[in-house]
Image 1 (cartoon, rainbow, N blue to C red):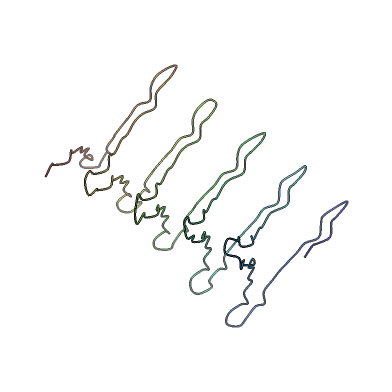
Image 2: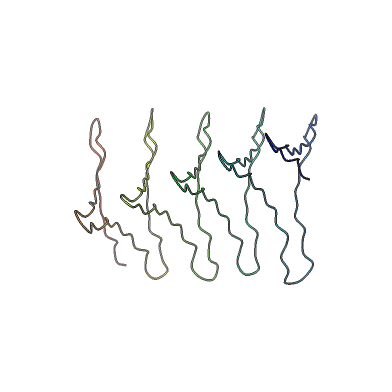
Length: 213
């Protein structure tokens, strides 16, 4: 299905719309072909926005439907299971060749009672090591990017907590290391641990070494 080109103005649009229903609306399903060969690869599904030669490139938007009286629709991106290695899921912002690179944002929804949660969990390893979770700020020609972890303020009650815990092990427990960056031409980075001020008592700072059983 190909829309016509616009030689002097806008190209034609392609629109696929399922019908509305009194109970449930119609579905739109796009499925790539399977392979019948043992070592073959299934066909791909590709959605690509158009390039803008002198302006802004086109956007790709995937939006689940609103729920008028119940739950909103879900958006699920899931990589395929593999007999050896599972498929990868990757979200990458675009590079800015002359200016700022694109941002990648993951935001949970606001709730009338409790806000939505964001969970990042590495996969379990049933026979070996579990998967890792890495958060790395970008290298900069002048200053490196920052990594900031901030718990939410509680406007009427207790503020949110930040907890970093090393895993227990069948033999040795996991280590926790906090290291400030080296300064190759000037001052090295500082490590600061500060408890919060309180209207009555200030918060405590406690560092406890593990007991040896």
